[in-house]
Image 1 (cartoon, rainbow, N blue to C red):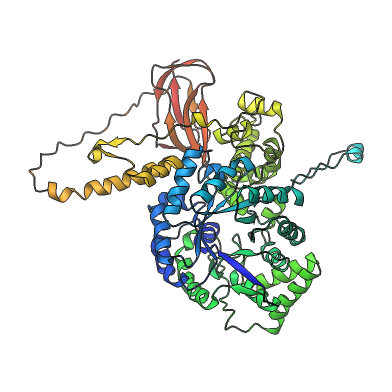
Image 2 (image 1 turned 120 degrees about the horizontal axis):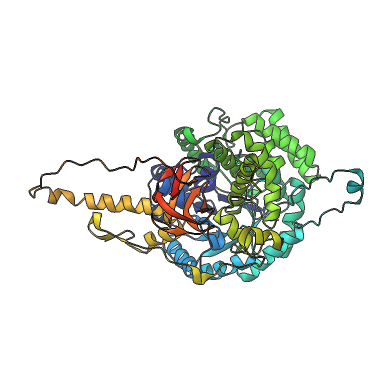
Length: 623
């Protein structure tokens, strides 16, 4: 009988660094690793997508396209290269028309991408089927990802009779629900089906039924993607292997476990004991691991576990003690016997021995992705409201139900998390719930992101959007971003080619800053020739005039710190109650700041690009 094989998708260069180090790996670090990756024999390497296009521009001032090209040129086809895409949202927070999707997929595949893992935050199949078709037609490999989630915990009704006659809520996220999505994706043309457990919430008992159900329902390979944050990741991966999963997502040691996917070294030990061939060159993996240690050290500023490094471990040369070796055996025996308690006990003991982070009980109990939790912590800290964390966390199930019981994965995790924070602040201030809904939350409730798993209450939709009717995203309303000429840099266009313009379409605010720097650099590079010309005598620069008159009229203040995206009014304008004055980006969400009455604009104190503090005066009206 031929030995069973397990294919590996290595996440180290994308999801691993995103989960653990805020996507701060520089291109130079990746360039250093690529020659070592050539020999690793991974089936797939995830190197792009997710937060990479945004982060490398925003924080590293690097080109996303150059990163993809560099990896592709170095790997020479020795591993398939994959990216993560949010279906109709791609890498942004708004739905895009098919023309943008096709342009992006074409450019990505031309630059060396092989596999596009496509998911939709609502598991709305209408949002992925066109992407699957396009990627097939363009010569790529569409990977249909079904987002795993759970039904929220129900609050027990108060009072004896209320509890006595309460009906158990209908379960939505059953095995049949996920299988139905997978079968449809395969029918649309997906060549891989991934169970994407972005929050690490799928426990071993559930994976024991889900993987066989998926394997029986589809003919294409099944991939399992999870995280270790709540403490299920390693144990559930072991069960997935035993139950016949075809591809497993892992990270290399120093970039594994914790809030990331399981470490391949631990998976290798399990596979050796199970008689399964793990399809990777572990000697090459070891060479990558050695280099990753120093890279992780260099990322200490972004490492939440920088003071708690795991022990070094080489599964090819290090001999495990009898006690630790027995833990691996105990985990396998418990997994085969469907004894979840003993399995988790053994896997947690293994992780503790090697010094990996303990399960995050807060995230586990709240049933949210680790990144969503850390974002909420950061948001509340920036607002000076860290004391509201427990309140905001407790409001997540309410916001999620109100919005149609959406799965929590980017962008819905960010939308729901930010709205829960706003809701907690509203209640603290004595305001009614949803006094400050973000533009994205309004769009989600309206229906512009797609069909939610459960229908939104029409009364709630009317209160948030002004209409009880579900209104889908209208592609005819899409407006391409401007590509202005820049007179200060010789009149060149902001985006000089198609790939740069795509960045403007997907990430307009970040790309605008990034591309202006590129044009400035190019313009400065022409200066040496101009330096030989006579220089006009520079006049001394006069200080800018500032309006220091006291504020006497009614004002509009910033509800939270953020960045001004656009301003819609100017002094002298007459505005009506409810009219949008400006858009404030806060917590990655756009918030329309509206007039609370009919007024005449006296002064506007901000302009696009300004960063403002909470309660900063934005607009003054005439008395």
